[in-house]
Length: 259
Ligand SMILES: C[S@@+](CC[C@H](N)C(=O)[O-])C[C@H]1O[C@@H](n2cnc3c(N)ncnc32)[C@H](O)[C@@H]1O
Image (tube, rainbow, N blue to C red; front, side):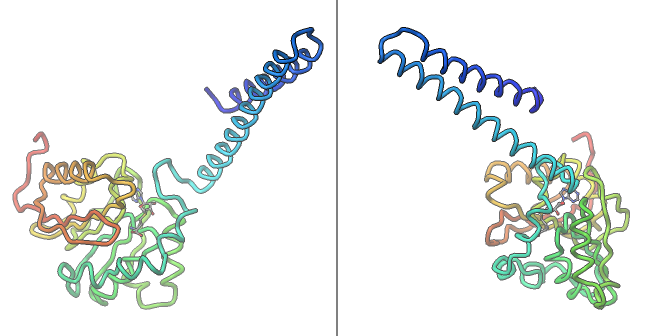
């Protein structure tokens, strides 16, 4: 049912409640019954008014999401500042988390880069000969990264790429891929892992981390199973604050997509 129709229905309930309330005063009933009747009418009206208010709030939220081009289930621009929380940076530090996997001159994909909390750190690690492909489906997120690196040497190293939800559209082989707080947002984990498998050079690593408040232990285990089915081998499960984390190695041998 559309929200407008529901709002109309609840408005009718309010009017009906008010009419019954007035009517109860005209009825010749015992005082206790009148009181009970009035309480019922008032509760009915209160319930309907609360529902109208909630629907109105929902409408405002949907309009805002539409205005920022955010699809349901995707970290909205409204929450972009939370990604840059200074306390988060203490634990989620590219240098510390990825030093084992990144070398100077590497090409690294930061898929679902958001505000670029890792892209800039990785750009420092790969140096001027390397490259960071910072991919996100929201132009607003990419604009934040662009603003952060404007006028710096990282403008040359970081390439900002607006992707579609279903695919990054990339073709360049990568030495390392990170997908931090992303997999729970993609439309199909299987398609995602297949695409990452095709982008990653053989023997190289894909690092995923999921927020525990969005991804349960069971759904994370399910993601690992899907990744393995797509040709990845689990290489490590590092301990990361506020993250269910797995590092996968791309198996050298191609897997049968029918598997
Ligand atoms: C929770 S944020 C995490 C951002 C960043 N990785 C971090 O850890 O701060 C998820 C980001 O992934 C992006 N995203 C969601 N689905 C995507 C998809 N299918 N392809 C590319 N980016 C996606 C969202 O726009 C959002 O910026």
